[in-house]
Image 1 (tube, rainbow, N blue to C red):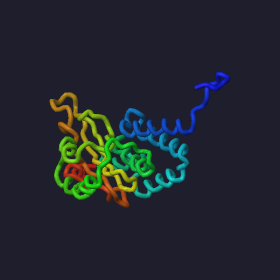
Image 2 (spheres, rainbow, N blue to C red):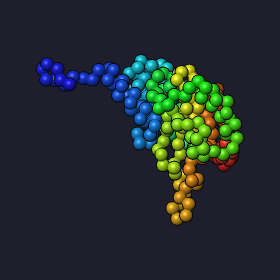
Image 3 (spheres, rainbow, N blue to C red):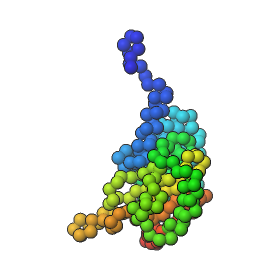
Length: 221
């Protein structure tokens, strides 16, 4: 837009805010395409400034460090220390928690109270056996946020959320990896395998319920 003298008008604060919100939500879903965790930090710094929540964001970073959910190598490093692998989608789910609490996270699906309460009741039991991505989607339905691409050869994280910002997110972390191209099998699993479900916990490690596959990776980390 231009003013009466033909000069281009600057964007309004609300326009800048809406742009940042859209970019944050796109980056949370496809973090690898946006530059990974570093890009998320930049977007969240900018959004906190635009929303006058710099103090809250600073306190969140301090809390993540205190809980060992953020190491010198970032949030990805916290996952890597846990089971030997840290990916952008795993890190994005941690940033999504702050976004959810502050009304920044756009949910593709909002769980009803009954659906959310059921998830609370069965998520640990679900992790007592190994589960695939397809089995999990069949059990719990489409996620509120899908972090990562749809390629079955790569890891991804499914985030489930209720409508209230005070309700913790439940994050289902799936693992897969490409094998040597000279072998007949392209990837370790035919579809991503669930390693753990992450919910509430005062310490980062305590917030996970591990599947057998996740426990085996921890032993080998």
